[in-house]
Image (cartoon, rainbow, N blue to C red; front, side, top):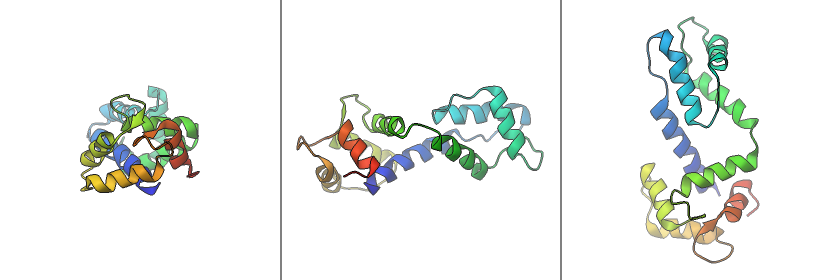
Length: 150
């Protein structure tokens, strides 16, 4: 379970780092912050983003520190439906929309994250949680992994 969770977290962090606001001008910072939040699946309005900047911009720079952003996002994640969030994670792995996570899907995610994991290791991860023995992880199996029921 920990490996799947770790890969999912890394996938989200790498996409967050790619979209994290680097704009130096206050007038554009709210737009970049809004883009970063939307990239993480949060539908936020300009007024919400401006409030976040106001609440967390302690130095009056018009910017929010990454640590503060992480806190805001963590709070928002806790408000979400856990099952829906797990299914979103499943869809990150299932890029071919086959309804399962195959060895190919898992290899892609590991490669994108810079993980040097052998096919044998990835296969053993799948085998450990493959309840129906089809060689792939379906949504129910993934829900079980991520909820700790395995």
